[in-house]
Image 1: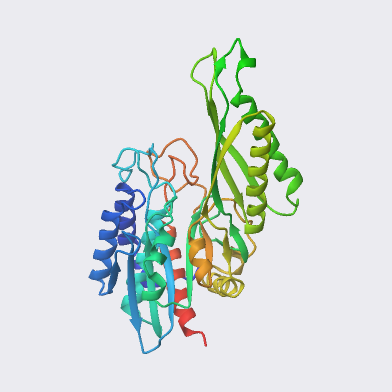
Image 2: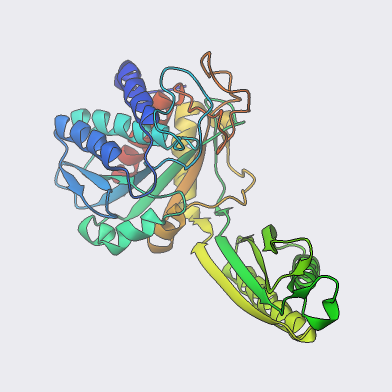
Length: 397
């Protein structure tokens, strides 16, 4: 690997920063301590900062030369509302909060690039370092944009990165076009008429209606959607009733829908609503249909993806960059930024979990797992990628 020597020499401090953030996780829009750590480091390194976009967001601004072009590099800062079961020294000190997705590492890698870029400034233009809050369901990217991110920080393109457990350390993965799915949720309330369980004919059973709707919804994916288009409809909760001898008034279906295109999403939502309403009507019941679109699909732009591949290959070698990695049905709010600006989102290998210190939990080192921990060996790799990406992008004609 061709990593940047000053970044390698700075790895121990980046590790300290990363583990400090891991020990003090903060949920979406609560990242005040994390934002303060980021702001203090950037200020210490003579990097001007903008604060308050998206509530707790921080943007570092590094200028060099007289160039007017700009590029954005984005990292997320928030943790998850889950209990960590690791017991090593930097495990979470806050009950019910954990950096189980590696945002602590993402923040540290971007800080590593910030430290290097501020001291060497081997570029002509402006690098915007975007430390974003509330990726985990809070739509922090959208909030930063609504607060004027792209107006106050005029960048030509924006780039993102996420660690990927299971992929070897020293490898990258990316694909042009759809990389991650849209994230959407639904809550459908079937309203019937309660009755004694011994006299079902005197009521309208919402549970049986909900069962019929749930079964029929599965035909949307298997019979309405084209087989070559990806789509997942998952009912994750069914709630109804409070006693064994009572037919309840209502039954609720809750779950998620994920797709790679808006067209498929439109189809699934329309068919879900039609099936729910007509099935309820057939049983003389009523239905309240609520469908919420959270994150759009993350679509990498072809030109920026090809450019990012060249940068990754220059660092870890062509054989260690998977240029057509399998897309994931997971979601990411960096998708909002890619709707407004050209750019690319990549995966950086986090290994199989062997890096975890004594005291890690018994579970695998998967994202959103209580035994997860970010691999600190990635710090100089990710930071070198960010630095070389910014330098190379601003050097382009």
